[in-house]
Image (cartoon, rainbow, N blue to C red; front, side, top):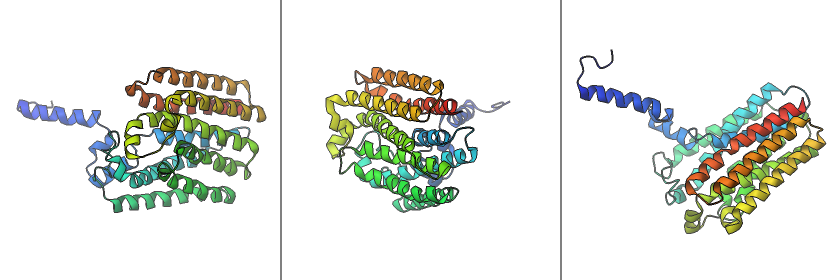
Length: 313
């Protein structure tokens, strides 16, 4: 039996080892510092960005064509969302490495804390972009060409917060571009419905990222970073609510044009309830609630995906 014949100190050390092994994130237990910090740089331990990037693409894959979805394309886009989100995080931390050290929430990121070198981060970015290209080559030529525009949006987004007060909308454009690529991958065209779902993704992303930006508003004001949370000021929650309503209205319009079944509209109703819950939770600006509210948007994505899936069959 573990600990038989061992001193209490050795037994306690065993206890700490297994406690850390099972309670820490698995990345913390990796022996290679470079590998460990590379995965942290990619935010593998914080997958919410992958979910939020992936769901709109999957909406489009299901909505673009009646019947069962193309499971191979679903897999390509799911992996692609992980890779491009990771690449976006690396670019973001390269661009913000001098700013992040002055922000409470980000000062411990690998580049800001100098646990990984800039050259290592650049090599990692190159590797991710090569993998993304391999995935893009699985698509038809029209969709492949659109991937280059998506890559441009992804790698330039982190720099927009220095120059414009609406970086959340630019991020929404980058996330929504996956809708356009996915639609083209299925149909080799871009129909009006694809652009409507793209617009819905843009407003949805602008809304939830405004909530995210509220956490950093004080620090961003001090270091000169721009955001919609700063731009909207005391009307921030009103703006988030309006953006959520636009999102649902645009999705309902797309559903009407696609002649989706009632299940889709029931899903939109459930998404409305979840969005309303978010506004209610943060209406008094409790700092400890912002992150959990932002994270809950993965459920919005799942709900709407199920609506498209059930409504299109």
